[in-house]
Amino acid sequence: MGIGTVMGLLRRESGSKVGEAAAGTALGLLAWGAGWATWLPLTGVDLPPWKEPTPKVLLPVLDHAVFGAAWGSCMS
Image (cartoon, rainbow, N blue to C red; front, top):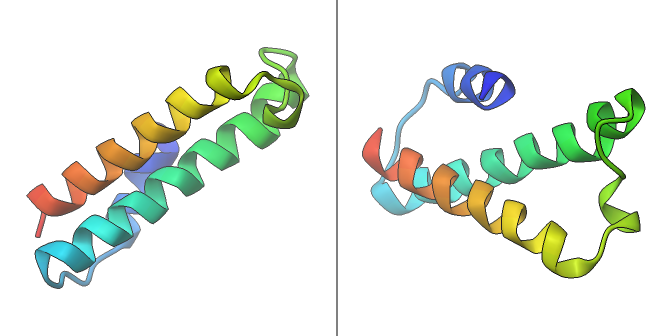
């Protein structure tokens, strides 16, 4: 929630609902990638996504994309 909150607060311009949903999706995926591909493997909490089976990686990616889109739509 920390990096997603920071990225959301840094985005100050608002546009149409579709544009905000797209930006929210992109920021959600960026937040997922920043966590799972960097600090989680570095600290030994989890394996990097390229070493995990596809279903285990796909669900968090979809979660972050949908949550980002919903949040972007709500905040426009």
